[in-house]
Amino acid sequence: MSSHILTDGNPLPTAMLRELANSSVFAEISNGPNGVRHHIFHFANRDKQTGKTQRSIGIAIYQTRRHGPQNGYRLCLVHEGYYIASPEKKEGEPEDEIDRLERPIPQGHEEMVIIGSPFWLGLDGEEAEGGRGGCIKGRTIVVVEMETFIQIKLSSVKSERTRIKAK
Image 1 (spheres, one colour):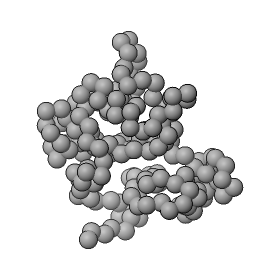
Image 2: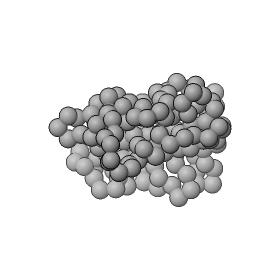
Image 3: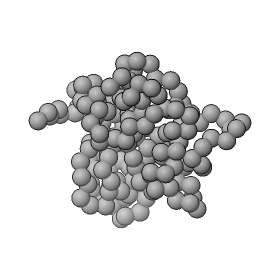
Image 4: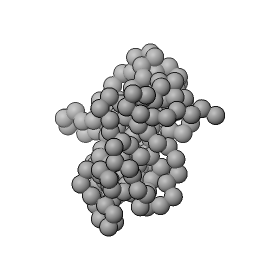
C-alpha cells in the first residue's frame, strides 16, 4: 500500500501521479485530431438539450503512435457540466480547451489539466457558489484548488451530500 498525507507543504508526489496515469483508472486516449473531443462527447453522458456533460470523467491523454501514457501524458479531469458542442471540431472554429489538450505531447511530459468547474451543492441541496464549506455532488473525484498544486481524492463517494471540509 502507498499512502501520502496531502498538505500545503507536502503536495502529491509526481510518482503517485505517474501511477494514476498508468493505472487503467483513466481512459487512455490518443491526442490525435478530435480523439479527446470525441471521447468527452460520447463518454461523459452529454445532455443533448444543454450540450453539458452529466458526469465527471478522467482521461490519460498520450501522444499518438507512442502507445500509452508511460511515454508522456496529460492527465485530465473533465468536470460534470462541461459544455461540448459536437464530437468533431468544425472548420474555422476558434481554438478551445480541447484543442489545447490535443496538442503534441513531448516524450516524458507530465501534465495535470482540469476543464470545467466543480458542481457544488449547499447544505440545503441547492447549487452553492464556489463550494467552500458546502457539499459536492456525489461522484468519484473531488478536487480542491490549492495555491501551488491540486489535490485529487479518488474514493467512492457514498452520498450525494458528502460534507467537504473548507480549507
